[in-house]
Length: 347
View 1: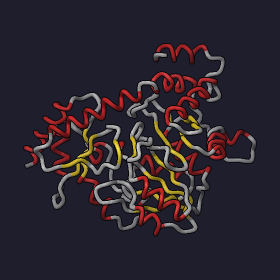
View 2 (view 1 turned 180 degrees about the vertical axis):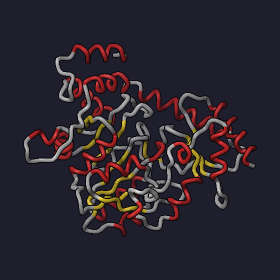
View 3 (view 1 turned 120 degrees about the vertical axis):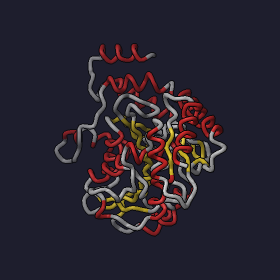
């Protein structure tokens, strides 16, 4: 089914709301594609995180562990539950949480840990799964960047924890314009997430929001899900080829714990230099990195989150030391040439 056929199917559907048969079908195909028992489609990645955390007990007075390198789109849904983030420093040269610090950070207020495979780079899942098992808290993966990324054991990112939360925003590998979904093997969790996203089933006893997707979102998702593997393969190859063209620079790729999906190619710059001016040089060559384009910074460096600030030197050092290069709507040659010109301008 191509996109035009999918939209025509949605237009002819007797129910175009979130209770459409197309949404049910989309959820079934998502679960089959990723290899989980359940999928719940929602209207954004933010809704996916919020609904999952509420189902796991997030509320005022509770805390959620999250990497200090996590971006605002991960943090805002935590705040929306009424819970507070509890920042954990990341590993050196990786935005993934340090598993040892996760263990030390847990207390009776913590209801979950949210891991973020930023830019499509898998986190070291074995160590993290061992850590959350030791302290008996659920692991939620904010896999909004990571459709099709694989962990070191070959499994899909977003399928290792209690739940995986995805966005299908127009910039994502699987895009429906706006949208998202939750993957889980827990039937109880899937039912709780679905109920929350349907206004608590309007029973008057449970909290909820209207976070349902429309039949049109589901139809586009159905049409594009079959293209995901090919898209991921192409973006991975662009990243590999771009990295090869930059072999003469004193940079390396961000630490890899599995197989990235090519959402971005992320360079790790050498220690001991202030790199902000290099990011500005890249912008002058048409490449907008996350600190420049999205004001990316450590998670507690924002007015909404600064009250929970803790010392996280690894995360603070990563902000300007990592460079996010595009893999969409470009060629390896065009990107590499721009980086080399920026390097000459900066040097």
